[in-house]
Amino acid sequence: METEISMRFTYDHSGITDEVRKETHTRLSTLIDHLSKLPSTYQSPESTLTLPLDGAMREAIRALLEKIGIGSVKYIAVFGIGGSSAGAKAVYDALRTQQTPRMLFFETTDVRATRSFLSEITSQAKSADELLLVIVSKMGETLETIADAECVISELHPHFPEIESRIVVISNSGSPLLLAAEKRHLHTYALAPAVRGRYSIFSPAGLIPLAAAGFDVEALCGGAREMNERCLSTTSKDNPAAESAGFLSYWYKQGLKIHDLFYFGPELRSLGFWSRQILAESIGKDGIGITPTVSIGSTDLHSTAQLHLGGGGGMTVLFVDRERVDESLRVPRERLFPDLVPYLSGKSLSELMQVLRDAAVSAYAAKKVPLIGVSLGAVTERELGMYLQWKMIETIFLAELLGVDPFTEPDVASYKEHAREVLQDAHE
Image (cartoon, rainbow, N blue to C red; front, side, top):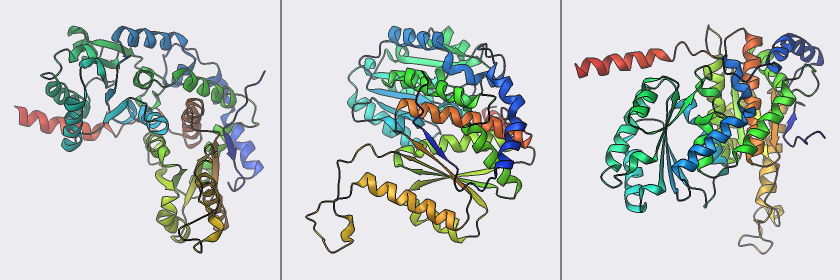
């Protein structure tokens, strides 16, 4: 029995003709056939798409967390930057509740944020059992990650002498970090080197902190598997990754080099930042690049929408929303200001958000801004898994259409090398 796909895509205002769609699917057919037959051996970067199928990996993660003991965890600190933490942060911010363990992400060397975290932990946590520190660095030498982790662990040690028993190090097999962690008998998990960081949300880098926080990683991976089935098919019908990649490729070649990711739900902001990274880092090379921006509705309808609609165009837009799942909070009928916007009476806030989203789509379409839309059935692990996998497949398809390698980032290393040289000179 076919699983119902609740994540919905709309292309009514994409500006793409059926002829262009057919051409896109023809150009992608060989790649789709290749990706649909990938073995789960993690020998190539493309094999990242098979991570959601790896039940043995998730069982190993469960065993590791059981060994550590996470029943009392209240604080999870994730030390990582870019792809090492962005996926987990996107899921956490979208799904967290008051009952979810507090998860803090150290993505840059910011003194105030680090001091704030240390103050909170040392004043609130009663024992090391309430803490879990997850250090993620694929190559094992990320400057910001190592610096943050060393500072925090050093500061926590006097308060929690057993803190090293609460550390998990996740890095490439054989990396300097993993070897050093094993030497100190820390908990470790080796990553497959072929899996690139920005594509690693369904690897231990993303799943370990999320599982420790109590999120349903089986449902997350299940949603990704559903999207694989939908996108890695040789048929052209209803392939959302091919449709969206074709949309971006076509309009890029028409000169539209900015793509705004517009999310109607503030809890999806980090999902936008994750989407921004995978598009920018994967496609931006060899003189080719689409600049991704992130907007949040309805807030940015009062700011960036003016630029989009009145500033000369030059962009494409993706609208992302979620179905109304909570109608409980409504504008009362007996109001403090009954004569102000009287037609609001009785409307739910969720309904108003949907009205604003639909109005925005109409306004953008009237200005002939090319746009597509996606609606999450609800913000759940399954739906987020579908979205994340869709975006990764879309990126691989888009790279094929534009003629770039989606798995390299040759220019990112330049700033790292310069920073390392400066630090080494100062050290000597």
